[in-house]
Length: 309
Image (cartoon, rainbow, N blue to C red):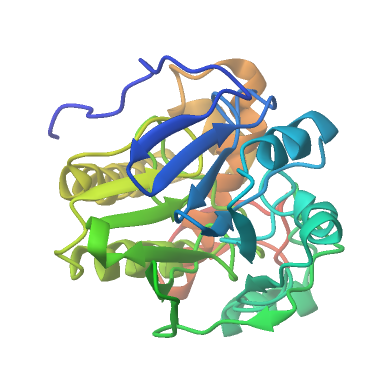
C-alpha cells in the first residue's frame, strides 16, 4: 500500500481568522477532540456578501468570532451546511437570528439515507446516531447539481453521502477549491457509522469526487487544506479496501462481532477509539453482507456476530 499521506502537522489558533485566498477565510471553533482533531473549520466566503460554510457547534465564543470578523461593509447572506453533525450545524440557528440569513442544506438527519439503511434500521437495532443535530432543518433544500451564486461567487452543490446521508460538498470553481467537509480530510479518514453512514455510499462518493478535476485544493471540515486531493482520495479508497481484507481475514472460520473484529485489527489505535473503530467495522460488515461475502449468525444488530460465506 502507498505511504500514508495524512498529516497531523497543523498550526492553528481557535478564534483567529486566517485568510486562505482573497475571498476565503477560515475560523476554527474551540472544540478540538480525538474525533474533531483541531476543531471544526468555519469558512467565510466572499468580499461583501458572505457565505458562511458550517458555523459549527453551539458555542457562543465561536458565534462572536464569526460576527466579529464581518466588517461594516459586509453582510452574511447565506449559511451553508455540509451535514448535520453537532460539530457542524447547531450554531446555524443562532447565526441566523443575528443576521437573518437563510440556512441551506440537503435535508434533515435522515435525508439521503440509502434504501438498505432505511430497511435495516427498520428491522433491527443498528444503534448509531452519534453526534446528530436532531434539531437541524434547513430553510432551503439543496440537491446534487444545484448552483448557488451571486455577483461574487458561485458554488456547485455536490451530494456526497456516506459519512452522513445529507452530506454535501461545495465547489468554488473560480478558486479551484472544494469545501470537502468530513468526506475528505487530510488528517484521518471519516467515521462511517450505520445507519446514518453507509460505506457503499461513502466509497461511491469518493470515486465521484475524482471526476471533478478542476478542484485542486480541498478545504475540509477539520484540519489543514489539502493540496493533493487525488492522492488523499486514492489512499482512502485503498485504505478501506485494506480494512475490508482485514475484516474478512479476522472472521475466516470463526464468528465475531464488530467490536471483537475492531480489537483484532486496529492494533495501533488508542483503546479509547475502539468504539468508533467498531462502528467503521460494522459499516464494512453491512457492505460485505450486501455483496454476499459475509453472513450474520443471528438477527442483525450491532452485537451480531458475522462469519465469511
